[in-house]
Picture 1 (cartoon, rainbow, N blue to C red):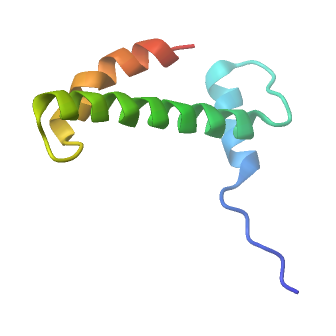
Picture 2 (cartoon, rainbow, N blue to C red; picture 1 turned 180 degrees about the vertical axis):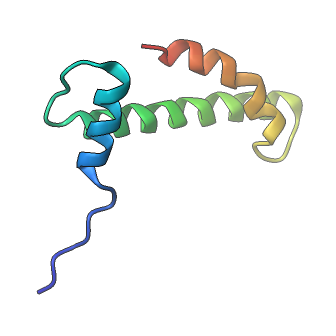
Length: 78
């Protein structure tokens, strides 16, 4: 049975985060970054969907995403 390939190089992400923060990072920092990203995208799409429905659009548009991006980034700022 073949081993499943890694989705991304964990060591590379850890190295990048460590270089930018200039601090020690935990063993599972890449997982935490991914989970935070997933929560951010979920929040962004939920808010954009609400804005689109209020505007009467059939689906989520780029304009509705742009409207909520600044508030979503402000909420998820560390």
